[in-house]
Image (cartoon, rainbow, N blue to C red):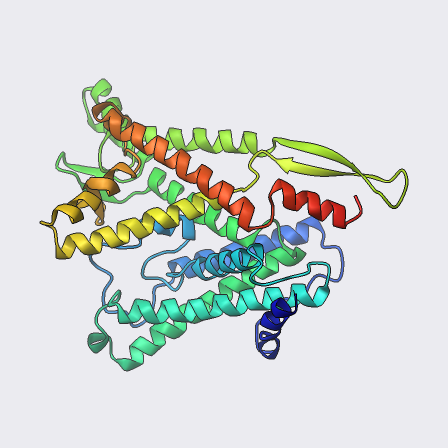
Length: 400
């Protein structure tokens, strides 16, 4: 216990310098919470569209393309890092606390403040480290092309954007907003992508003539311009390399299913051991670990993609490298896509036509996805201190 406290006490000197949102000292009305939430999301969306000043180029394949949706980041903008600093620092601190490397007594106010400060400090350090790594790796052009001044300016922009995200998340979590900042930012980024891919007016030359990128606009465009309406419908629903109506309908269906099952929970009645007759309840959600297994799975797959792409660019003829993944540049989307190897089989089929053409790929992906998420879910429950044994101990300590 003492060792754990000594580790947390190392954060004390920094608490006065860390940005902090004061907890609400009154009950915040729903309308006011809604206003705070909308303003926070507006700031996040503006940052997601504000281009970085001083960058030389963002052309070429994006090595982090596959992770951007889940981490709410947008390439070439001040929100390049997205929620990566928050998620990474939160996961690290949760693992340290769950594995008892750091001992924290949540009933002690100082411990909670020190833990929150440690997580915030780690998030800031991660933001600085990632900003420096992005610049030095040549994501925006070589440092010699950027110049020292622009390189420092880019790092500062990414750093302050990370601070903004941390403060917005804390604002929502401390009772001023609705829900968690991390979940809202992820949902907002995904919804933005869905709306854009459904109604984008951008035209792309796909080899069959100019087509609209948006699935809905593309549907009406094909119905109006094509004489064969049946063929036009088939193309709108199943076209390759561009968003199609089937993708959109499948997304809406999954969204409705998740919303439906999100409300499923089992309520366990508990009775106080101290106050006779006092009863309470402990709700257990069906989605007990929420979206954490998906985040961990996405991080694993993205690291696989990143390593595989780097190796394939250098050693494309090597058997082991090709076994890990074979990549090609997409003609329409502008990013690399896996076409062989392990990276291909752990990637979701792009359409129903792909499922029919290669059922083994679809089966392998489903089995791998479910198995990996189940394993991550079980592991996360154990290390985060939310297993059945841990919950029973917490209830017992609280005299239930």
